[in-house]
Amino acid sequence: MLYSHMDVPESDPDADDRRLMLLVATGDGDALRMIVERHHGRLVGFLTSQLGAQAVAEELALEVFVRLHRAAPRWRPEAKLSTFLFHIAHNLMLNEHRRRARKPTSPMESAPEPGDDTHASNRAVADIQEAFLKAVEGLPEEQRTAILLLVQQDLSYEEIGKVMKVSVPSVKTWVHRARLQLRKTMGDEFRILS
Amino acid sequence: MDDTDLNLEAPLRDALRRRRELMVPGFTDRAMAAIQRDTRRRKVIRWVSISAPLAGCAALLALFVSAPSDGLNPNEADFARLISAQDKVIVSTPHLDDTEALVAFAFSESMVVAPHLDTTDSLEKLMDLVLSES
Image 1 (cartoon, rainbow over the protein chains, first blue to last red):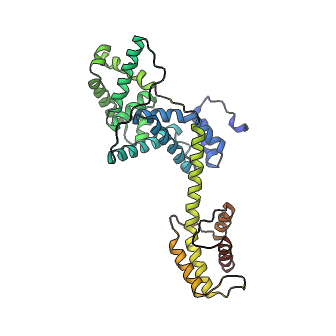
Image 2: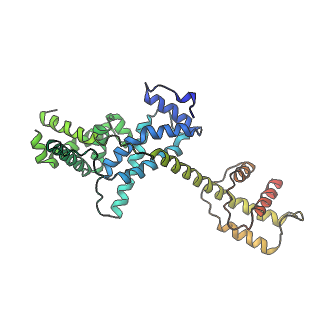
Image 3: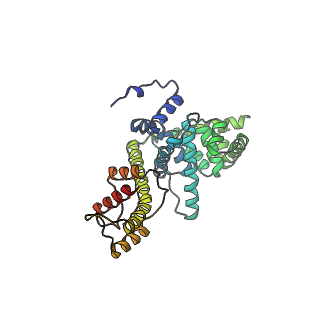
């Protein structure tokens, strides 16, 4: 069923998000569905890169939207919805890491990457990319989150600061340290590229 | 930014952006179901939190108000049952102010979570008694 107020061109996705969130606050289920459909892909991608397992990432992403729905009546339109979603995801990811630290389990293997090409050069590229992903997963929490939000999700330093509730200089420090650590970790793969 | 940083940045970006957006078939339906479950659970918690003080008020009123013939039985055993029943109800959230709206909401949702009371009719009679005296 289509509602006239849903047919808005996405020339300004952020403005459209704000409009949908105001509808969600009134109990509009269709608006909520649109938000989930629009944003869940990036959340699952971000959380999978954080946790190394897509199944767990999907469960946390579900919880993100549950919490978003609870917060809808209090959500302020001046906040960017994607930033708010990443903020919730970041907090849930921290909880998940604390839970894992209390109850260590066997390492979860990453989900197999789609599109694996048997051509030798493509396989080499895929191996290097996989190595980068593993290296990022091995970073300390703050550095990993900062580099993912910056490089993978294209957030600005200011937006990252809002997600992580820290200052912009702190974000820049973590990004810089992450890059240094990745260069150190990548070792031979990095020398091939430089 | 020097050359080595440039060499790192491009492959890093390529690697990370492979997972930038992972669309999951059926995810939206799962999310909506999870949200509905959460909404129902919070409604139950709210209902349970108001039933305890209401049950307590009804028990006190049953002691001091002469009930109609088809109303409560104010004998000692019933009173003891009501008082002990109140203790068993979990109070987890503050109750709302408008008692009449609470009762209307509770019965409109048809979610009577009060295992200590024998029948829904008994609970309805208690609520009617409370409202008639308020």
